[in-house]
Image (cartoon, rainbow, N blue to C red; front, side):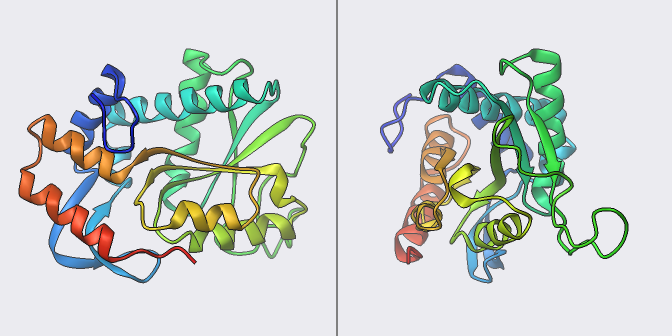
Length: 235
């Protein structure tokens, strides 16, 4: 299936779309909800219990993330080990799953791993004053700062500042989101100086597929398109 961005959705992508609609990963709310960015929206990308309580969906999601990671690293001829650093808190339910899916399925050459980023600075113990339970090791790991979705990239900017405090350099960190809401977040992330910015899926591609697969009515998809077009947040 060719989607609006020009990408092609193959059968694994369509399987993800069907389960995403089934578990409520993307929802339209008649009453606007407040996003992490503080902005209100009728369209909401979840990634919480809808994902963690549905392991069949989470498994497919992790495989997609790992396959995209493989493609990125192969293109760069990068033979390091992929390490995912999840942005608190939603991504904390994803990164351990990514690691375990790769451990059992061996999708990446060296087996992905993950590091935990805290939402509050550690104030005790051997890691006092640190945000991440881990350290930059650019000779060993290719680090991917990961989140389920991006709107305006505010949380990515905060997470990047924490990584820099812990000794990372922005040009040594990739950032990956599962869904780009297509409101300017990817552009904003590029301006932050990440090595590479990647979205596994674009929101309007997903809602297009929902319509084509008979999972969403056409008018719901049109409402999403109108809202996204009306609220662009690129800086």
